[in-house]
Length: 223
Image 1 (tube, helix red, strand yellow):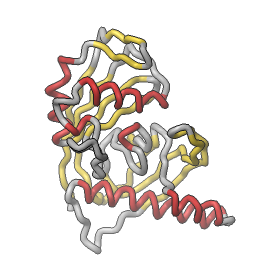
Image 2: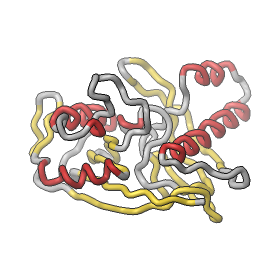
Image 3: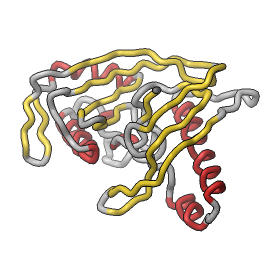
């Protein structure tokens, strides 16, 4: 069983930022176009967070700022593309002299072949509960198995967000190759991971998996 997603990516190749600046992009565009759509900041009109998979995501990969829209988010970014004339981050103005837009369609679901994906940005796979369990597990093999289960559940949650529920006979196979990293998130040190995985699951380039994907974490790309 497979399904098709539509993505739009907008990149600003002449502007260089740090990976951690992705949340500043989210703040800027969410404010600049706040009357256009709640998809840009993933909040309801009441101001509360909208707990669903974000259809607009903000990333910095290889120092290049990027916006990713999926389905309705892709249509929204296409409509706003010509309106982006500059970026304002931390009181600094970055004039936009060039910007690229790319529209693509992707199949998602279980495939008959294996594919390798790399985390272009750090993957935050652990929440408060499984973080504690991870640290209490001394066996390297058991830790890897725990992370593998989480990575598969991330993919299943991504699919479910787009109403793709796999039948029982279609299992996601995954071999995870990651290394522990430390990152700062909301002024706290967090455990995250770099690396990638091989799987029979199909994913769109630059989609985020795991926690805080709207801020750029867990961005995957097929290699």
